[in-house]
Length: 271
Image 1 (cartoon, rainbow, N blue to C red):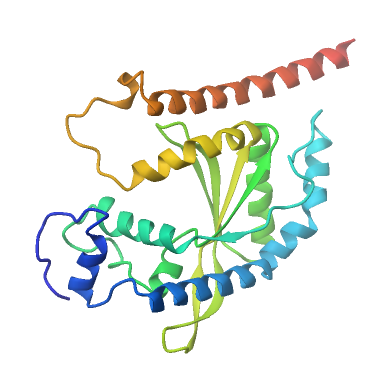
Image 2: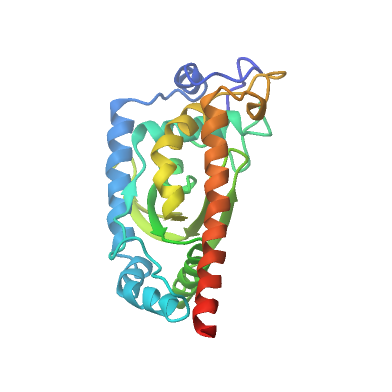
């Protein structure tokens, strides 16, 4: 492995040149096309996997089981969402964050080694294949998380859950099943790898505000915060302040709505 030219972390704009100088490979059109083909192959195999088939087959039953004990429906949509793949630009950004920004071992490689194309991008990035399930109320998030983990276990698939609650107001559960797929390497030799699709579960309120908050999240996550800068909580005229506190408030409202619905249901039973 070549030595680092500098102990200073490259910026996002310097990242491709840094990779090319150290590893003698850049992010060429060949790399881009290979990633897109392999990601789509992984997507098709996930859609045909035992896990996603059993989720589709049990979709109505999951909703019915929830509705049997609550006065409201579970899902915002009648059908399960369609999984998608992470774009080439997004996978580039994520490899930069993992190799550089969030690498606690810098200037040494992160745990497990440098994350480089083509195969590492698929096997060591946890959301090359992703989907988002929207539920109506906050109590549906935990319920659905547990039920999907049970379905995964029933077909012998490991599925970890991460209850995301970020300082910036992002709230969702991320499920990470392990799925074995076959993809071609750059020499068009087939190889078997394990991918970790991401299944997000969030409420309607959080889904409603996501188009507002996501662009700022994308912009912010690939930049290093300057030491000594004023925290966003004190920048009351900034968009960060408004959007972050809006999402925190919506999460609070999500909780209040569940309590209100439960209280009204109890009151109706006592009449």
